Length: 503
Image (cartoon, rainbow, N blue to C red; front, side, top):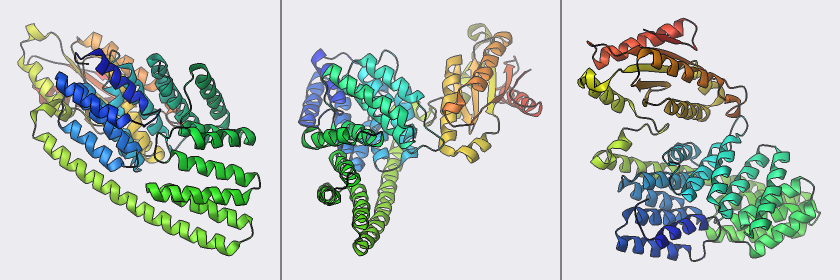
């Protein structure tokens, strides 16, 4: 980070972590940080403070405002750390309005753009965002890999609130995917962390724990925990306490206290109406219908179920409208961004994978060819194409396909040199290596793609790549060089795929 008074940097860490703890007074502290950073001439820290305010909008039920504020920061900076954190905040807002695909597309660069020496709290925060969003409502089973990475970073940051936040998300995704055993183990880890560090459970953590305790045979413990949470725990999302009331009502209903459950659900609806939480209100209506059915009042149950379906239909329409409005705002931001030089690097990066895009790769090749051979040394170019990638999208969904592209991009980046996305499922590597060295490095890449643990991404998934590799010749242009690599790539395809052909 830029040089700044230690108290300012410390304030930023406490604010980012504080989002997971309590929002009381947090906006005032963030605004004070922005003012102090502006006075100190630290634009980076001021922008990061503004992003804390945007995240408070996201979590306070005002996600469109939070997204807009984060995008405004993004449009005014070229600072790598600020850009990364703006993507994380945008991802959180998009996830909250239901645009999961776009949320993940922002979460990946948010995590990828940070380096090992960057602030540990930000690295952990971005990893937590990514882990939740790639696993929420995931088709084909959840992936624990992202949660493990986030947990390592949270523990390295030594911030109990971040540790609990990731364990909470991990436990919830395990529970919703049907893995109660893992969910119960993670609840135990949450409990031990809270007891060891003295960090209280926020309302969302307590709700997750109570829900899993209920499903694993401890309704009494779940009841005590959720009642305590509703009375005393800090809400770090606008729907945290109403969701806790939903859990309480479910516990009461299962215990035969249907009347108490109805009272709890009506209290939940009052809170949802006050805070404009349409999703929670619709769920409460559905549960109210079930309670009336259990009491034998089928006429009222039918009426409430009709009301639920009407409310849910309206909510889906409203959500679509919000998503469209946010997408339109993003288009306007993108148009403005193209006119400013300070976004040159962002314009040359592939939005999904974080690799260089084709325009930047073409420019890189042109620069190398213009440079005298005595100055540049040997150059080799590889084109990499994922085999049968259309089948991945058709079988596992485009979201899984996007994840595959991002994982392959990570493997490419480890090879070194210039790694770019050439288009679709095709990538380019420009290496400052002679043909023999380049061949060993590219063969290592091919093997790494084949042996990667793809089943952790989706059950039954396997991925291989065909690669064409060639060296720069004295009479080459960028076009002849790439065309030769492309011909070798197609030779690899015709020879059976999953191989490297050089020439």
